[in-house]
Image 1 (cartoon, each protein chain N blue to C red):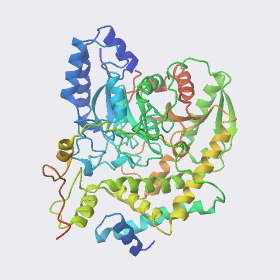
Image 2 (image 1 turned 30 degrees about the vertical axis):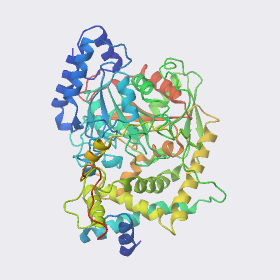
Image 3 (image 1 turned 120 degrees about the vertical axis):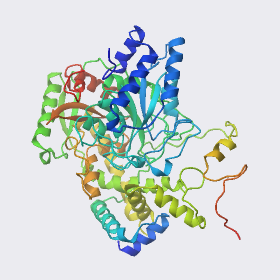
Image 4 (image 1 turned 90 degrees about the vertical axis):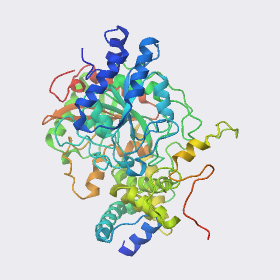
Amino acid sequence: MSIQFKTIKELKKMLQSKEISNKEMLEDTFSLIEDNKHLNAFITLNKEASLKKAENLDNNPSELPLAGIPIAQKDLFCTKDLRTTCGSNMLSNFIPPYSATVIENLEKAGCISVGKTNMDEFAMGSSTETSFFGNTENPWGQGLVPGGSSGGSASAVAAGIVPAASGTDTGGSIRQPASLCGITGLKPTYGRISRWGMIAFASSLDQAGPMARTAEDCALMLNEMCSHDSKDTTSLDENIPDFTKNLNSSIRGIKIGLVKEFDLSKLDSDVVKVFEESKKHYESLGAEFVEISLPNITLSVPTYYVVAPAECSSNLSRFDGVKFGRRCENPKDLEDLYVRSRSEGFGDEVKRRILIGSYVLSAGFYDAYYKKAQQVRRLIKNDFVAAFEKVDVIMSPTTRGTAFKAGSMGNDPIQMYLEDLFTIPANLAGLPAMSVPNGIVNNKPLGMQLIGNFLEESKILQVAHSYQTSTDWHLKTPNGEIS
Amino acid sequence: MDKKTVRTIAHLSRLTFEEKNEEKITNDLNNIIKFVDQLNDVDTADIEPLTSPLEKTAKTRSDNVNAENRKEVFLNNAPSSNEDYILVPRVVE
């Protein structure tokens, strides 16, 4: 029986019943990677070590929660002795001497990291077109982008190669590709998952999370990914619940907020229709819709494009060609070494954001831009705090539409920035949010977004799971069959 | 933002670009700055800036040596090193 398109839960069952051995499962995974090479979902494979781990598991069976489950890791997480590029030429030769805490957590739970997935360079992009290692393709159609920045992870899960993958989300980089690839992805509350060993883009926004076929699998992954980590000062020291526990609770009487300020009339009518149908479905499950106002939410994208570049320009100053990563050939002096290593190592979008960041942080502009954006950021957060007095979750489309063609965003960076219109607010406020497949338009999948209150990942997972146990959008596959 | 400002921030960022791209970069940056300028219309008097969504005091850990010395591993990762140091072009003549 094929392992393609199976969930973690199904693969666990296959292993436990000995329907397949650990080694066979991993061999099948690498065959699927080979068969889907055209997607360019992976930058680096971890074949030898993975097969060895699987063989060990066959000889010494394990009771660990994710024992033997093949997982793809976004190439933004440091993996000990396995090349970690962050999609950049700058790190094209970087082999980390340690693993990120979240990678350690997943591997301690028994996962096998089969490879590192493609991504927008340093996670800056919404289409995986800024990767130094070429575009990743969306399995739903030739020439379609998978979204980004976690596009390789989304593509690998959507193609049924692995049941789940890790991603990171600074402005939508888990949820937007999940929507465009027809899978389920969750960004937890800021601080839930340690950022230690995650290559930083914008430290006050970055958060890792799971990407999988179902909300249930996201919960299984999240159970293992979260931890309090003394190596990350922003890591939350809060109780970590069993995220699978409330999945099957009824959502009758739950209040779902609809944001008045999100003007859906500008979206494609088919996209709006998908959203309206999901609302009707939730009503049939006993949920109640409440209109809420988030007066400052329309300022989220401009706020983000001050805060994120500012933090990026500061974080990326560590890449100077001295201690690790790429160094230019024959530098004539130290200044030349810095300038040429950076200019040759970074791509256009990364440079653009560093320049914007340096500008908004420079003397004379700091208050007008950076401080101002942080003040507006507080207003946006306050809006959410007030809204969650009235509702349990907030629902919106995840994206403005379905996957677009590679190259179609043209040369205007702002058009690409607006791709994250619905997803950025949750990052600014630090709230958990997820994308759940809720329709298909012109043979391309689409997702809806559920935003939860602080630390209430269990609640949005419950709302997502109730949808997935009564619909089959999440089971649709790019080949037109239901998994 | 004019070309001179772009050159200054490029220098601050230790980045350089080909002269033929200068026009396009200046244009892009101007458009982005124009786009974020809408923040100026918001009244933020007396609003405390939000630097992190957590707003919790960072927990400190005790100052103990808890990592082994892996000098060799890290020196090996450097583009250029001898057995003790990471090497860069001579700074002092």
